[in-house]
Image 1 (tube, one colour):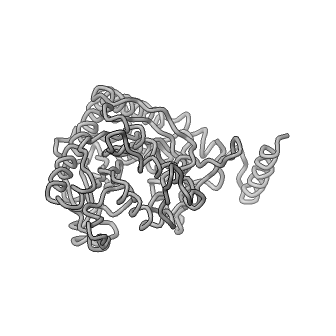
Image 2 (cartoon, rainbow, N blue to C red):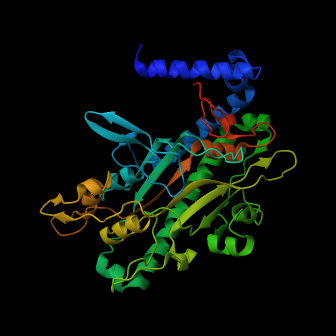
Image 3 (spheres, rainbow, N blue to C red):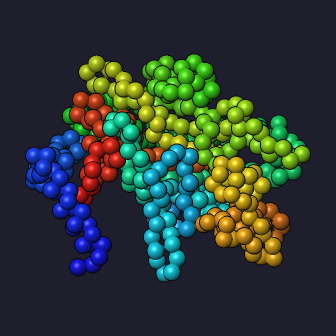
Length: 411
């Protein structure tokens, strides 16, 4: 028997012994946590809705002129993420170590290098070994592996470093216009998806006891600063959701990942923005949050984030400084004569940062200026379907690996 298989078998034997001691058999565990769900009417309805949802997104994105991108499941670089995870899994192959995909963020950027491409999308796999709840609570949002509709669009603004430094009013006007464009793009995607679900899955929604309202555009929008000032840092998202009857709404200006645009971040004199003092209106990222609506009472559930995205940092200098300041890397790349002198200090970021530094024959950066976002498919389904029949994120998956639910994942 292969060594890994032997290790897994021994681990499962110990697990079975442990549940036997607590009065449960393997038969009971599988029936309760897997088989019962697989044959349930609830999961049947959820999967019909999921199919309509994903199909509608694919159709919308293709009709908008975006190109479908292949899945990237392992690479030397992956999203570092701003929140804590247990660790990043790695795979040894052909003499190198590769990381499993947290998100396809860097792949999306580089796929937009051809400025003739309007944008790209992919129903991407994600592996994030989320830390379980320290209080053993069902948080209803985390899965160790999940699906995300990853989307990125070219802005094609061509703002260079000199303009970045010396014409902030002009740059801010451009960024605010692009922010409006991004929000409108994703709003229309949500509208199309809601229309498709209602048209194809009315009976399934009825069985689950929820309704989906096709939202009007523009969605209500709040800044994080305003929410925190009014309700405090913890729970302000749900409180802001109570201020609107809309099932979907925005929160903008969240201090988050190193690639989400903060402008102005660098100044011509070499100084930087103090991150603690940067207001929401200078942080060009956005979340869509969603609520479920009970079919009988009309009561709305607390809001949950379903999409996160941003206008992206696009110039080499601020990209490097944001990566350093976010402590993703300890040093900046030293590039000389077509090579990176300190490649060994950059982890998997060396080739990526070299590409960011590259220019075409006219001296213009090869790296694109883009905006984009990722829509968590399981997270969205949980957010809009939860109620009497759907109680935790496991309920919208066949094989969902929720860190708050299972000591061992059997399938």
